[in-house]
Image (tube, rainbow, N blue to C red; front, side, top):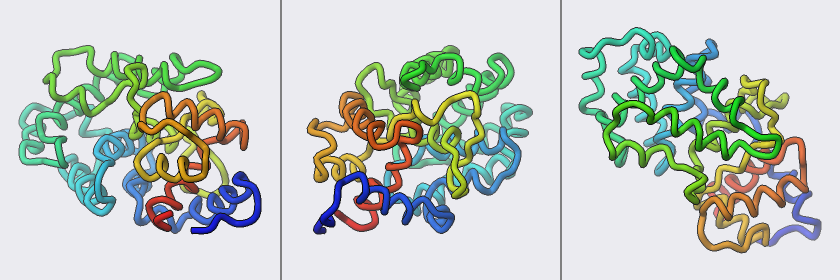
Length: 256
């Protein structure tokens, strides 16, 4: 691809307009929380979908639909009112390395968040700083795994303070926090400013960002996220992660 004879910001703005559009929803994992209207259903379906959001997007969507069906397509009611026998429905669930053991712990941990911490928004709001949500991800993870859990399960919620890019949880935060008139992201969490969000950095966004000269670091880790954030906030300090649409679209769809 030949980048147009214009500056990179304008080039990315054009792609934001192209991909930040309702037609994007159907083929993206964000289509799962878009099936719901209640805040808590959107939060839970979005969180669980984001947790398995690596690999082929069709497979992600298919397996996320499976999780919702196991919960009777009422995720909040299931989380709050399930019993041990109903949890066993997850025994055969598998998405890559995320299996039924992981799913069952995630359900019980989500219940703890709503019963004892007023839900995930309260935690992220409490621990986000005026500059970043990354410390809040660390604290959310600490609380999430505060009860007895299978050691293997912690791998599914990475920690940015341990150098992880934490792509999936950053994507979940984009879904919940970012707001505009386009109707893709939800903007449910008004207690957090979109300006402090970090770009969900994966192989597609990372490779595109490097080709455009936005980051130099070769690894997709928390250092690269910080490097990319600093540039995107110069492009738009109020809504830096809107450029995730552009970077992802250029990499995954246009194969830049």
